[in-house]
Length: 388
Image 1: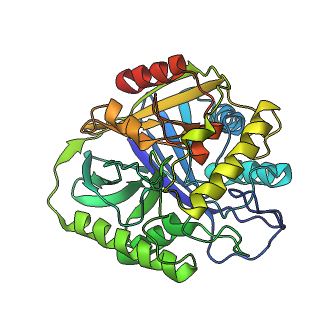
Image 2 (image 1 turned 120 degrees about the horizontal axis):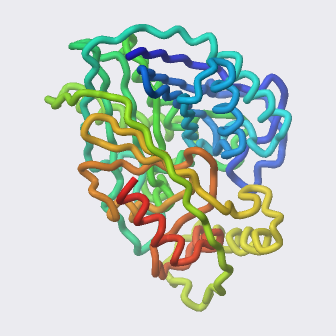
């Protein structure tokens, strides 16, 4: 087996807007901290995996497919499989800006072919997880979940730890919506601390099933100091996992993917069911949700675009765990649909689609207005998550 890793600075060389909040309409050129694409790659005689963790809100399926086609042709190898995941920071360069996206794709193509691979012997991986509300929990009043999960994958060559993958499911929206700079938000901050503490390892981040989870009821501020405070909490939990006992499993490259058709309907939403105990912020987001719903119905939504008609769901077996990569902003309740001791659900991967609420969800929230999937589609998603 061979392995390579690369950090690519993906900051735009020209001003763009941010992407993630409707108020982000001004072009900016000030970066509080770097934005990266962190790329790890494994290959053996049969399969070649290239995974991108991008400090972006999203990265659409069309551009993922373009990257995969490019690398297959460049290396003359049809076994290459590309997985693109976004950390989902709401303060990165806009993925709605075609000039920036074109720049980004060309940059990734140029830099990935420069990656230097090294031979690995006796590769193993460990997996640890804990329930963690260090940064976030349910952002919906009256609706609780017990699925806030911090996961850590550690890869070894013999006894040498060479790669760590942190997975956590919480929206990177600690900062105010209208901050006048770009930021990788808490994923970037936590990874920078890991790089300082463990400089001889590579580190990357996966955003979990965070559709319903944010820092709304955890944070005590929305400036960068508040972000660091919460990020430090998560980092302390990661370092504890790094020090705990762990069981290693053999690592082989096992990849699978399937396409799921996505059927949509615009079911009327009964606004009389809005709860009386909602926060002002929740009421404001419901108003914004109604606006986004109207845009979706006209197929003119500038954030989400036309609802996607298919989802590419990929999976990678990592020791005893299978990581499932799903494009939409899926609610954490879908983690209960699978064996959580064997499967980890990751969102914002291989494309981007609006929220996927649980079947029969009754809380009137912002997320409900952009979830247009039919019950049949959600049942199909659940079955796929169980069997992929």
